[in-house]
Amino acid sequence: MIRLARVGARKQPYYRIVVIEKDRARNGRSIEVVGTYNPRTNPATVNLQHERIAYWRSKGAQLSSTLAKLIEKNPASAPAVPDPTAA
Image 1 (cartoon, rainbow, N blue to C red):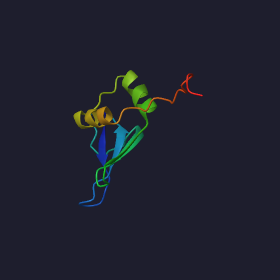
Image 2: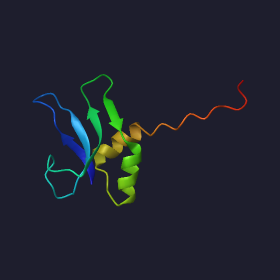
Image 3: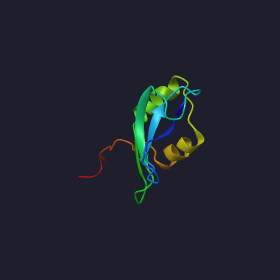
Image 4: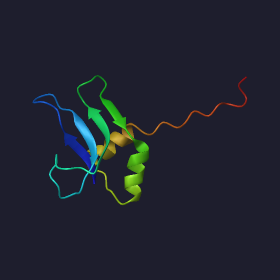
């Protein structure tokens, strides 16, 4: 499963986006950290490794509902393709 693990101080939430077995504790031993989320900045800062998330999804990992919303709001940026008509 790919979900959020809270790592911030009290009243200062900061989250790691982790790949972890579904039955483990929220902050238990994770397989891999694939991003971070900081809701305290304005706007909230989201750093995602989209290629690693896609890899784990292909292996059968499921997204938590909260993380699915974060990924929907922050899609992978498409590589810039130069416009052949612009000179």
